[in-house]
Every structure is written in structure tokens, then in C-alpha cells.
Length: 262
Image (cartoon, rainbow, N blue to C red; front, side, top):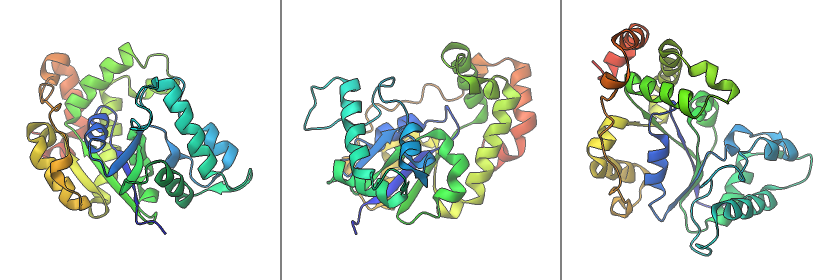
């Protein structure tokens, strides 16, 4: 059995999951895919598991860059890596894909990595199950719900409008309730997860990644934090109306106070 462990990154949408994934992927001992969603399709037969993966032809940078083929365009790279993943996870057309199949497949793709896994915000809503998986480490990043609401509403208006699920996040109240759901899960499982506060991470990324490196037992000096900045912290004050801010605070107030968002 390989000593490599599984790693998932989760959190409410627009809470910094992409930034955190980019940070961890700067470490040579970590390889995290970007919303391949393989852990949303556990215990499914192979065809259904593959069907529910993110379409690699439509999205850039699903897989971390490969040092063996740095010149490949992202779509070709994604397709190639998805094919390798499928070949290695396959045990039969009616066999269910389990966590050890994913671990075996990803370890073969990234043999030098001590941690392999995926970043997908909605893993937070599956975390009660994911934390029971052997060799699984869960990282959850959380952020001020007012900034989350401002960023989410803009994304729904500009980029997510065509998605069927966007109606679940198209008002401050809906975002606040969903943030509460995510934070309640994180609170309940706090002793089994590694929680990262977005505002602390962007304010002092080197210190926060040093703590994460200690937790993962990896050399923290090998994280590159040079691209992290904190200009979006508190920007909800310019992006939301007073009524929208009040709407978020009325719903999320108790947990906001608990996590220092006064």
C-alpha cells in the first residue's frame, strides 16, 4: 500500500478554494486536480463515475501541469490525463470505483506526490462521508459571508447565469443560508478537518502555509505564496447595498460572530 494520502479542498463557492488549490499545487509533494469531481462519484460503477466527472474539454487547468509535457495545450493535456486516470481506475465495466482506485490512479500519475486529490467547493456538503475515508485529509477554507455574497452574486450575474443551479445562489439570503449550511458542517467536523480562514491566508500567506505545511508534514518553504494578495477583503461594502448587507447579517449573524466577522 502506498503511503500517499488523499486530499480534498472544499468550502462555499467564492471562498478561496481555487486560490488555496493553486497554493498547495506549488509544492512538489502535492498534486490536486481542479474540480475533476472524482470524489463526488465514489462507489459508482465505472461508466457512471466517468460520466459524472468534469468535462475536461470545456475547462482549462483541470489537471496540474505535467513537467513531462509542458508544451501541450490545456485541452489536450486534460484529455490525455483523463484517459490515464480512466485506464488506471478501471477494474471492470460494472465494478464500483472506490477511494483506493482513485488513490492508485492518481499516485501513478503523480508518483512523487505525498498528497493527491481534488479541489471542488461542494465537497463541503459531502464532508461527513469523505472524512470517514481512510487516508483522506480535508482542507476547508471559509470567508466573510458578506464578501462571499458579493462575489457570488456578481458571478451569477456575469458567468453562471446559464447554469441551472445558479438560481440557488441569486439572492443574498440564499447565499447566506448556503454559507450557514457549509459552516455548520465545518463546525461539526472541526476536529477532523483542517480549517483555513481566507482573511488570515491572504493577510499572511507565508505564515498560514507554514502552519499547513507543519500539519501535512511537508517542507513549508516549498510553497510559493508570491501571487497572493488581500485587496478583496471587505470589498462587500462597495459591492453590496446596505439592504443586502443587512440581509446577510440577519441570517448568518451568529456564526459570523463565532468566526470573527463582526
